[in-house]
Image 1 (tube, rainbow, N blue to C red):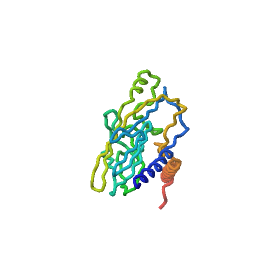
Image 2 (cartoon, one colour):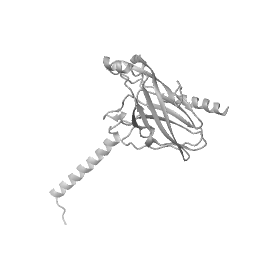
Image 3 (cartoon, one colour):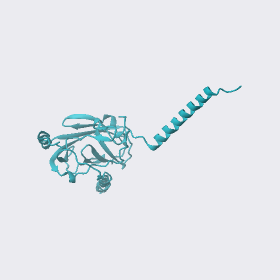
Image 4 (tube, rainbow, N blue to C red):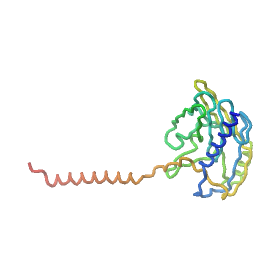
Amino acid sequence: MKNKIFTMGFVVIFSGLFVSCATTSRFSPGSGNKYRYTYKLISPAINSQLMFRDDSIIIQFKFDDAAIQFQLQNISESNLTIDWSKASLGISGRYYPVRHATNFYGDTNRSSSVMMPPLGYLREVVIPRDNIYDDGEKWVELDLVPTTDRRSPQIQKTILKNAGQRVNLILPMTFGSVARNYKFDFQIDSVKRIAWKDFAPVKRTPAPPHPNHATALDHVTTAVIMVGVLGFSAYALSLKKNPPVE
């Protein structure tokens, strides 16, 4: 009965993740046709709802075009931490270091881990480290696997062949002083072409910062500095024209 309560509570809490990652209507369609993938968990257990539990954790995943979101609950009797420096994400057999919530947007690859006590939970998002970058105007996220065909029959063919491809996530966790490596294997279950009107991009929470944009305060500070420099220059020039009388 206790386990059922934990599971039901986890599902209710995780439903909030779907709401918090709501979509935004400010969106311009990309080039070509749009495709949507459905995934299923195939290891360490088969689950079409992308959920897994054992005697230590309950975890559920959600894919978007660029990243994997998940909620993790610690149901062990020890404190739990994730070693993000050793986490990796594999796509069709090639593995990449990841960014997650604490360094998703930023110039550093350093990450920090949160200690979760028994029955604590967290919400996370992971993306291949080099699949997100600042282009000078906005943050750009690259797809885990292609989702637009750019009107190319060859790309369309490649996308449709992605059914059956694997995505893997390795999360090294520590329970007290005991280390365990969790490897989650997902499979693309289906690929479906959708209308652009039926697609809305994920709105990250928190929203990405605006890169390299000078704020109003920056402009005021610059103006104050310039006035100060010009004022000093004018003062120095007046001293040259009118030297002080001793």
